[in-house]
Amino acid sequence: MSQATNQSWGGRFSEPTDAFVARFTASVTFDQRLARQDIQGSIAHATMLARVGVLTDDERDAIINGLNEIQGEIERGEFNWSVPLEDVHMNIEARLTDKIGITGKKLHTGRSRNDQVATDIRLFMRDEIDVIEVELKRLREGMIELADREADTIMPGFTHLQTAQPVTFGHHILAWQEMLSRDHERLLDCRKRVNVMPLGAAALAGTTYPIDRHVTAELLGFDRPAENSLDAVSDRDFAIEFTSFASILLMHLSRMSEELVLWTSAQFNFIDLPDRFCTGSSIMPQKKNPDVPELVRGKTGRVYGHLMALLTLMKSQPLAYNKDNQEDKEPLFDAVDTVRDCLKAFADMVPAIEPKKASMVEAARRGFSTATDLADYLVRKGVAFRDAHEIVGHSVAYGLKTEKDLSEMSLEELKQFSDIIEQDVFEVLTLEGSVAARNHIGGTAPNQVRAAAQRARDALSALKAGAA
Image (cartoon, rainbow, N blue to C red):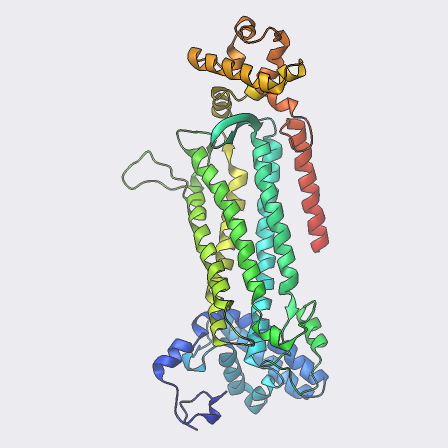
């Protein structure tokens, strides 16, 4: 056999792989990121093989010691990655054989690169999901504390980006937190399906060696071995599910980013972001640009693209493994990095938001945000809602003409629209009265916001306890 052919599979080939094809088909430039998981899986595999008698204890120990030494070389940046060896698996196996001799070649007994890479990716995803969950928890905790702190801070609530009804800033932040609570559930649910072990499926049909997949699964912390060898090596649903989670999460962060960008503008002037999360302009010295939320908003499309790439990658593949699956790693790796970084940025930034309370209150006053409260007041006095709606519409038209908010009109001015209106109307026309009146679970009353914040805090603590 030519020395130029790959030693792991070149026995039936009569000529070496074309140099361009070798580069084109190699994945080691990006899948070397799986090195730690690859070594972790190999140590478990060797341990199992010794336990069932396929390897001797001495062979197992030589393999494990060699793999640990290789891990050290990689961590120190001393490992020489070779493109002709194609991927992370063959690079590590070749180095192991260099170090311990023929025993290194026995490591691959009872497995294939097909089940090996599927296991590596699942180990990688499990590790990354756990890191991402920490950042997601941290962001939710920051939001809950901010909401509790700002339970009394009044701002306009919007529909169609038009002033609708007054709410509290704390209530608005808890709406964000609710989005993230659903994302958190999706992430944990995804982790359950990630944590299934393909190793032992070999190329596609299992192996003739007397392996014990339950032992390997236990050593690697998997919940169970995959049931079907064909599915085990070809399934990438877990990667698609993660990028689906990531897309929904980034959609939520993008919606939050849009509001942060609006709120920091001079036209809204609702909040201030610390300087460390903003940048300036090279030509306009007065500028303070909200770059972090803008960039998160922009990265959302990037993650959407990864989801579509993975769905398209898998849509026409027959069972079992195909080389197409090599293309799963780069979009998945980038989705992981993007989600983790966006969550970290938000977890650092959100608790540091400073609301400009006076600007928020003034904006709430400008848009007749208590008009619905006046209609509700009339209904409680016995007026049919549709009639009350018309009465309030006339009063708003009058307010636009006279440039007066409803709460700024005199009782005599209000009574020209309905004789039923009395002095007690001003209890509901104030912003404070409006938010306080919505005193039920899910409402914007300050005491309800504090109660909701405590429930969210308790739910997050219970989630932590459950995860532990």
